[in-house]
Length: 337
Ligand code: PEP
Ligand code: MN
Image (tube, rainbow, N blue to C red):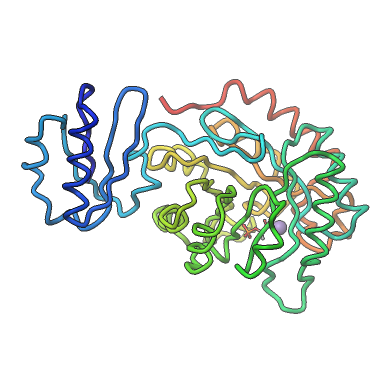
């Protein structure tokens, strides 16, 4: 249920209303926009008499909402959320490109790629230290050592870093990480979601599970937000379908759909969505045109020898070309009206 307050509602009336809601075991979330102030009501609102609320002098109108997500819901928070990733802002018209290898492999590899993507215009650096691999025999990432290398690349380039957290016990190692990625395979690891909500306020890049609906993605964001961390970004990386021509299947309509449902920024990953380096540029261009708030692109200095996801990794040269095209498209990108 959402309560829309009158423009001239006085503070005392609003406080009384909040207390009245709390007495009925409803948690009120006040959202003050430029033109409207809303109270989002979380709890069992079925027992609330809407007529009683509507009759209060401070209240303009009352709406029941159907969606089970509240904190992530655009209706509760009409303005776009802007997520500050150590100075690189994402959302609300601010656009960034995150780039780097799938996995951190060595200091030379990481620093070389970091410098190349920065020169091409990337504003955040990615690299996996803890890797969720389908096979237990595949490269599992360098772990703690990988994080140290990423931090070295951050010191060298000044780029904020994005890296995946797989287990909450590793969180103390992530103190200097700027953005925590929750991978597709962990999108519904609810205990992990609750803990990254409760234990940190760092921005979370939440990737869509490969068989998750958009509502399920939003519910996972809700877990993080309801636990105390509002800094969530939604990342579409394609889902599994019957199509085999690409690694996953992506429907770019998710950008306007998610933006209508939620105020959270939408990030597109054209690398995992397609699985092939030659498809990354067209998809990155399309996603930019459709209003993505950020892109996350895998770049490797020597893709044939990459320890993970070489087939879908752009070379630094390809990435530089893609960046030029993205820059040209960006001023014409679709915006929510
Ligand atoms: C990755 O970013 O390298 C990754 C493993 O992504 P996803 O969780 O989307 O598969
Ligand atoms: Mn990858």
